Amino acid sequence: MGSGREGPETFSPFDVVGHLIDGEETDWMPRARIILAGGPDPRFEPYDRFRHRARNSDRSLSSLLDEFTRLRAANLDLLRSWRLKATELDLPGEHPGLGRVTLRQLLASWVVHDLGHVAQVARVMAKQYREAVGPWVQFLPVLTDHEVPRS
Amino acid sequence: MGSGREGPETFSPFDVVGHLIDGEETDWMPRARIILAGGPDPRFEPYDRFRHRARNSDRSLSSLLDEFTRLRAANLDLLRSWRLKATELDLPGEHPGLGRVTLRQLLASWVVHDLGHVAQVARVMAKQYREAVGPWVQFLPVLTDHEVPRS
Image 1 (tube, rainbow over the protein chains, first blue to last red):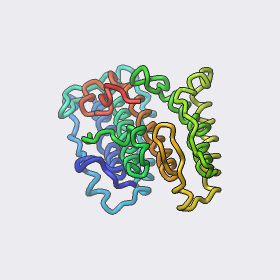
Image 2 (image 1 turned 135 degrees about the horizontal axis):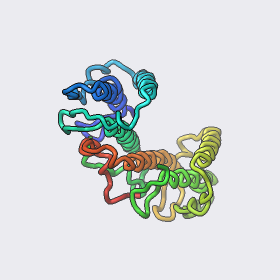
Image 3 (image 1 turned 30 degrees about the horizontal axis):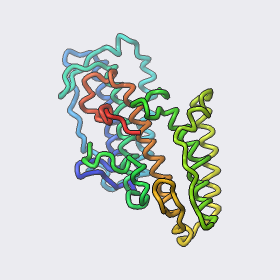
């Protein structure tokens, strides 16, 4: 169940949890710190979408879920402790592919990124039952969603 | 957040919780009982996809979530208490639109139906942030998923 995928370059539920861990360690909060440091070149490090593959090859799903839970809780505690004001949320960073972005946009993207992967995990889990539902397939559009997979 | 939708005939997160409650009360377990009764005409009642709209018009999302939690837990307790065997899982029912289906297919469809609506809720919640993410929209495919909505 945790290893199903929609296509060769897409993520299984196991991959998604690893990818979310990578986000906690290398993406959202490190980039927020770069913005808040307010230096003359607030350029983000490029983000490695496949860091998790080598990192977690001998891990279990439940151990990754525990690790993600700890990392996320610590990051949210830290974020809250900053008590960000509107002027800070408008501070800029430089994304390697997207150019100028604000801290406000980064935090909104963190939320949306989670939700996109929640939708993906639900789709991928559902598709494990494609044959098991028999004729119900026609009333269950999630089973035929993204036949050409998206990441 | 709980009232956003992808299109006029599609469900908000609030609608989804009401629809899942309808499923607990009028769909999955009542149909399983019809199958297990083993009568000569194991025909299901048609299911009303919009029962929740009138039923829940004065309810809060948190109260609906509490109600769903109670109903689902009770149904799962009951389902487990039946200790279904393979021969029972192969018993037939008659779906008003799909024709002959088995109890095994009904139970698999119950799971997939949940997951489809989890994916929908995540998509609909994500889309509330479509403007807030700024240039990140191009890296967040959930924001542009189903521009022509599915139910």
